[in-house]
Amino acid sequence: MSYLTCRGQTGEIALRNVKLWCTAVVALIGFLKLSSLGHAEEPTTNPSTMSLDSFDMDQPGSFPAHWGVRGDEATAKTIYSIAEEDGNRFLRAYADKQDVQIGITRTFEPKQFPALQWRWRAKQLPTGADERNKQTNDSAAAVYVVFDSTTMPRAIKYVWSSSLPVGTRTKSPVYWRSYTVVLQSGDTHIGKWQQEVVNFYQDYKDIFGEEPGQVVGIAVLTDSDVTKSVAEADYDDFSLVTAEAAKEARTKSTEVQPAPAMTNSQ
Image 1 (cartoon, rainbow, N blue to C red):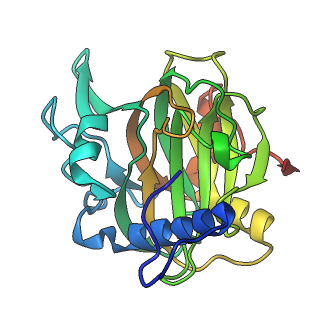
Image 2: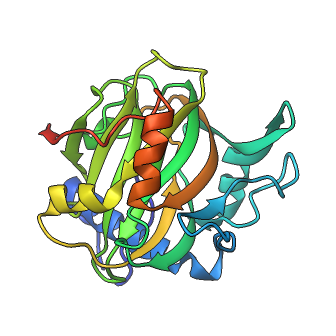
């Protein structure tokens, strides 16, 4: 995935892995600057839940009002738009050899709201995608939780993968301070809404071996640029929840699974 070039870099970088590392750092730092572009919805009065976006107030066909673009805005508006089915509005993503991330900012201590819940539905998987390799690093659907700092941020990327098994956790092939966690895989549930609840606070401690700093934002990405294919997915009902509310959600829904165990794959 190529996002931006490193500012201040002179000359041509001969080694592709250096360039990809450089662009990955800029990408995450650029995401942290989305505060001037996109903001989450106001918190709800429910002390166990903080709504980020349900897309109910957005008009069908429009770009989501609370979301900012990290990348080319014109391209983002061709990928992401509000759709409606049976009176429910949601975010639709259709990427044709494209790669643009969008996000919302929300700064908070992860101990307060350690879990994120949302619904998603993959509709078309990028052909030949595999998140372990930079040459195939596309996902039908991805949700990022971004932590820590504006200089060297960390991120956990939860994905609906074309090929990797559910439960896989692998270091990003382009940025060593980001990990990918596979929640859904392949076409088993394709075209069907799936509810997810992830305890990103615990995942962070398991992956990085220490307490996280503040969460600074949430992002989504449906991309198919490096596989030169098409990816399509829908997203809805993003909320932060307490640990207790997350446990209750898992109890109520058979579709919701605990965060995958650590099964590193490189």
